Length: 225
Image 1: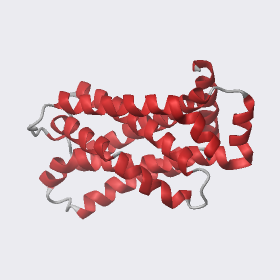
Image 2: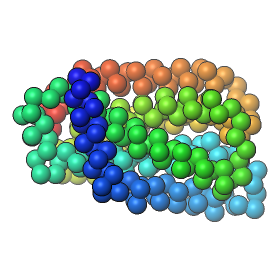
Image 3: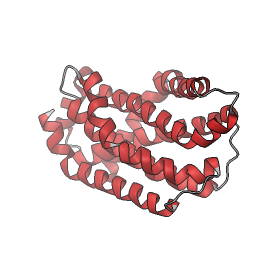
């Protein structure tokens, strides 16, 4: 399973490195979201941007993750790749882990870019880097696992581009809420009524559930798609 996961992840990442879709399209889209938020919330009132920085950052990550997941699913829809994988003898759990890992790597790079953008555009002073890193790791794993699952669910549908956001966004709403609250004190300096550790546990539970479900059910979902 782990060998197959490395093969699939390496394949997806090599395709992205050569096509540069994530670099040339997804990353500018994410930064543009931050810029539009800055204009919408009045850049002359810097305190508003600082207080909302955590939520705006994770909304940008969440919206950008839709593009990354759609791109990942499109790779399987092109040229009969999905059929070839089913016939190749690769472990379905390995395929799931590999595709989720590739999406997670892209999201991690995107989060670094957006983190720099938040600091520069919103004049945020970071505190508690460790909390931010742990939050980003847990949230990224959850987003990548859930996105990969719902990506294969929508892969066989002609309206998958419009259906995927409707399926995925309600499911990952807990990630948005928990990641925002967990990183709020580190990005805004505001104290939360609930300790960041409690939100981190929620993110970890979400990630474990979707990774476990994907490992167990991805093969059946591939056959049905």
